[in-house]
Amino acid sequence: MTKEYDIIISGGGLTGVAAAIAAKRNGVKDVLLIERYGFLGGMATNGLVNPFMSYFKSKELYEEEHQLTFGIFQEILNRLRELGGMRDGDKRVFDAEVMKLILNRMMMEEGVELLFHTYVADVKKDKEDHVESITIANKGGLSSLKAKIFIDCTGDADIAYMAGVPYKKGRDEDGFGQPMTMCFRIANVNRSQMLPRKKINELYQAAVQRGEINNPRENVLYFDTVQDDVIHFNTTRVVMKDGTNPKELTEAELEVREQCWQMYQFLKKEVDGFQDSYFQVSAPQIGIRETRRIIGRYILTGDDVITGQKFEDSICYSAYTIDIHNPSGTGTIIRYLDKGEYYGIPYRSLLPININNLLVAGRPISSDHEAHSSLRVMPPCVGMGQAAGTAAALALKNNVLPHQVDTKELRRQLIKDGAIRE
Ligand SMILES: Cc1cc2nc3c(=O)[nH]c(=O)nc-3n(C[C@H](O)[C@H](O)[C@H](O)COP(=O)(O)OP(=O)(O)OC[C@H]3O[C@@H](n4cnc5c(N)ncnc54)[C@H](O)[C@@H]3O)c2cc1C
Image (cartoon, rainbow, N blue to C red; front, side, top):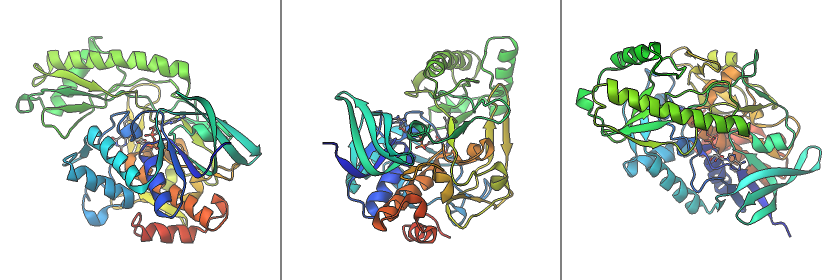
């Protein structure tokens, strides 16, 4: 007989982890989290993404009183710091290995049931607006699992897609989403000899002009890491491919590995400080910024972001810029909010319009292409996860469906649990 859980969360990225913790802490007994890899963290670990993009009201206001994301996100920061897995500089960088460990521990402490190396492959509905079960694939073959409520934290809205939730992809004019990027790290860099950013970019552009580099990105995007001699690169770019199309995803992985090596060769040959460096690691998979965005009960827009809209049902806040890496070539659009301004993410954007026992959290929530480019960063994703887990718990406690949850009660609980402050 198929076991029925209270809540099944698909996807163990930062969003899914936060959803699972919140559900347990709010009294839900049987919470299962399913993850296709053997570790948690999603893009933060399997994409080697770094650093946490701003969780403050503006880049000039990096102080606690201007912070926007707290709760489980704050606990993650604290735990990273405790194990020496975080560097608090101009940018907040963390160690992916420490991240994997602390997330495991957090799951174990809360008593979340985990199923690793398991892929959610299908959905069965018993009514037009109700998911009855999911089909999973793993070393045991195919099997199905039931739950009262499902939370889709796959980053690509896989469950929503399989359940027939309408969605959009990419920008309006041609449907292309943001490019994919393989993050990688170069170690044994001599920092004292390393050229300044401006000079590295000049050398890069000259190499592009000479036809030695065929990466469409306009400059070299790199960050510090927790280790002094290791530099993190978020600079490859694969355009006009869809991360939910298996063939194109395969092509992207092949193309991007060549780009990684090409960049490394360029750095070693041309850039002071890199002569004795070595290619330390590439991410386990190419990083996917944007795929499906579900149609939910509210579509958050780029205007909402830029004008700092707050909603009666705001469940977390962000002030991160609109940040669109050109979906078809060179260039990046950055639009800042006014200094000190920030926007809310409404609970309604987590609710698919046509399925009643499903919540979607993280980057595929209901938004347009511009708003997505801001809300996709890690801090608000954790905030959305915490809100989704809390909402699902309240729905079960009050015997209602997620869209019938009293959003005043939800916000009160999120404030009580320290996730938001207003
Ligand atoms: C190249 C790149 C650079 C970025 N730079 C930054 C940055 O500098 N700062 C920042 O804050 N944010 C950055 N982001 C954004 C951020 O990393 C992600 O948007 C965020 O981590 C998403 O978290 P998530 O948990 O919602 O989704 P994900 O991290 O994508 O997690 C989804 C999880 O679900 C699992 N999964 C997916 N499908 C299935 C399935 N069918 N069955 C089972 N498991 C499944 C995956 O393995 C994964 O663990 C970047 C993203 C990319 C790609």
